[in-house]
Image (tube, rainbow, N blue to C red):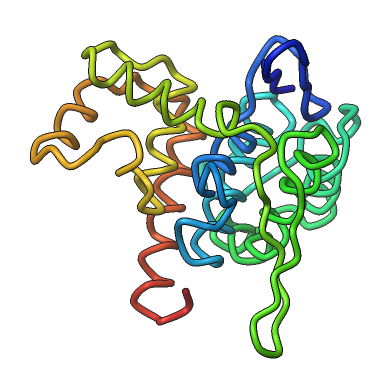
Length: 227
C-alpha cells in the first residue's frame, strides 16, 4: 500500500502491505503530467509500463513468480489482494505457462485505467472526461500537484546528489527509462543516463526479467507502429 502525505490528509492506496510503496502507483504518476493529468507517452506504451510495474509489485510480494523459462506463475493464489492485483493473480493462476510478453500485451489496455480508478478512489487523482471530435477519453487529473510530483522530485534530488538509489527507486527509474519518461528526473545533461546507471542498485532477478521484457515490448510497439 502506498501512503501519500498531502497537507493534513493521509492518503492510502492499494491493498498490499502498508509498510512499502508500490511501483504501480508511482509509475502511474510519473507517466502523467502532474498538473493536467495528460499522459506523457503513447497510451499503449504507458500500458506496458503500468503492467510491468504491477507485475513487479506482485513478484516482490511473492504472489507471482517469473520461471527460469520466462513464464509467469502464481504459486500463492490464495494471498488476499484487491482490485487489479487480485484479477491478475487469478488470470495467471488460470493460464499457467504463458510467457511474460503475452501478459504485457494482454494487460496493457487495462492496467492504466485500473490504477487510475484506484488512485481516484483514494483521492489522489480525479477522472476527467475529455471529448475530441467523436472520441472521449479519460484524463486522470491530480488533486494535489505536490503528491503527483513527489516520485520524480525524489528521484531527481537523489540522482542530482549522487546518492545510490535503493531497490525500489532503481526499479522505478528503469521502468521510466524503458517507456521514455526518464527525462522528468534526468533533465537534459549529456551524461545524465550514465550517471543514473552508476547509481542503480541491483534488483531481484525475476524483476530484472520483467524490465528487459518491458523494454523489448516497447521496442516492438514502436517499430510496429502500435503506439
